[in-house]
Length: 155
Image 1 (tube, rainbow, N blue to C red):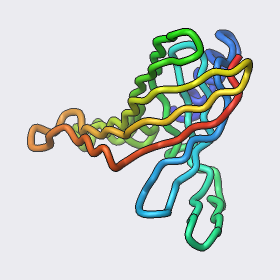
Image 2 (image 1 turned 135 degrees about the vertical axis):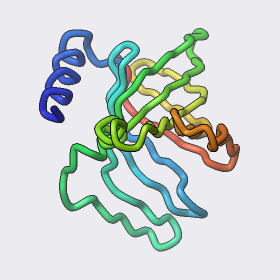
Image 3 (image 1 turned 180 degrees about the vertical axis):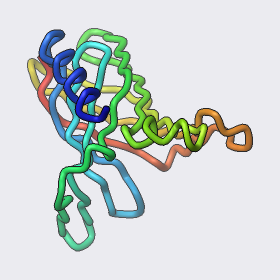
């Protein structure tokens, strides 16, 4: 099932064409960032955690193995405003979808931010959101201190 899902996503990305390819840094704690490789194709998006960077010690720890369960996929909507744009995105993990029949909960990670396009270069920043779909006890989590930055190429 995981191989089929990954194959379908790759075929969709190849068909639609990439609109963004780059790196996203998510603030985990003070001075600690998790780095993701991010690929956007039209309204579809795919992210994978590459490693963790500690700014205070200038130390980067790369994830040792590729685990498809950590792959994030979802929808991405951009509202272009000349060179600027507003972006909203919602992701879930492969493991979250695969565990849904057992748990009845799908974790949804969101992003809301603004970006700047200059020729083919792209810079973006915003806040993170979190919601557990299917959990009646859990409320929507929005914390403006949980920020992200993304740098990459846009086509």
